[in-house]
View 1: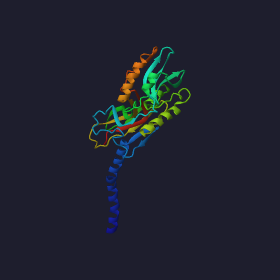
View 2: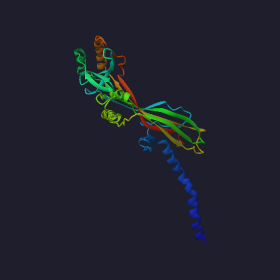
View 3: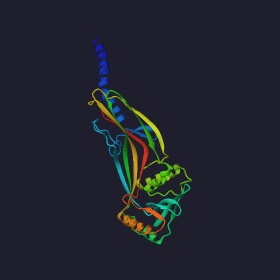
View 4: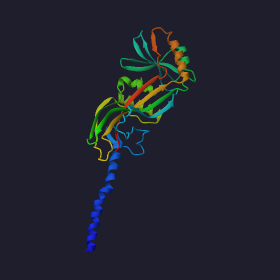
Length: 308
């Protein structure tokens, strides 16, 4: 009988000890789930631990009373400009024809992008002095395209540790037809022939291809859309050391900039001198530090919460 009693006691000990073994694992799993969330393509995903780093995504601070940064830049890449890239030089207005557009350089030519009745095209400018400048062999030496991955804070709240936090944000992303040209120019693309006859899907695909070619990254360019995204973070455990916890939500932005090198900056000054001698045409050469910059807002959201 003593032997039977011992057999009955052993399972009870195992049962009593099981919560002590499982609880830390369960808490650890929940912690990982909360700290590795990402919203992308209309749904939440869990990032693998090797990808969930500060080099790629915003991370929560252990102190909930520390205000999270408004902007966090996680990655920057550059690519040298090439002869086949369209480099926007200046915006222009032609009073004689009541048209406006942009001047640029492509394939060693000084060209003009003009939009009439919703249709856009790029035409060569027949001016010997302007084209001599555009044909300089070392014109684009030092000129670069830059891609920055930046996260913008769109939600920020302190929450009492005993209550759950249900956050909700308006997620606006994508581009409108009005800003497709500027986006394309910021990555050296030239989409004049597509405007007015192609939808944003086709135009976006061309811009995406330019981004992929230059930076070896994938960006899905879509039509401007707004959706509402909601999620919940649970209450904190009893041993959580603060009275409050912080929840913040960041939205991913991609910033594309054309940075002129010294040779191009000198050429722009020379171009401006020539343009000033042409009557009826006004070109704006005011910004030579960044020729073109475009901020593309993606649909990716990164919610973060103070760790347990």
